[in-house]
Image (spheres, rainbow, N blue to C red):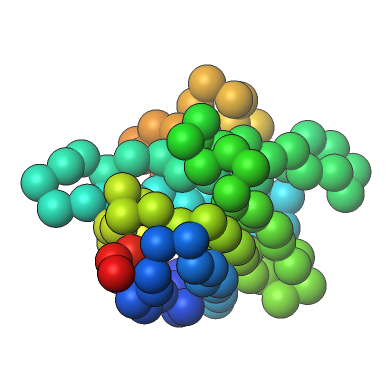
Length: 131
């Protein structure tokens, strides 16, 4: 049984930092896309960041425009885990953050932000940015 388990959410003041983790079990996602999405109350789930295999041991990283320069995605293939370091957090970053994994190795850039291209999802972790 494949599981994605997120951790690291919480309450933080504006300008603060959090580090989210997503640990996968049940199969390896090495060389497959793994991403972060978020969903705020009353809004649709939206893309935040993705890591996509581009060959060999190389991965590309992609970010939502509003988080570029503030969020950094990384992955530890040996541990089947991805991380999202979030700095300079803003109140508008408040949402439930979800980890997602795809079984389509060759997702192109135009596909990685589409929730329909991910088969596995974590349960979500709440991030609240408030003073």
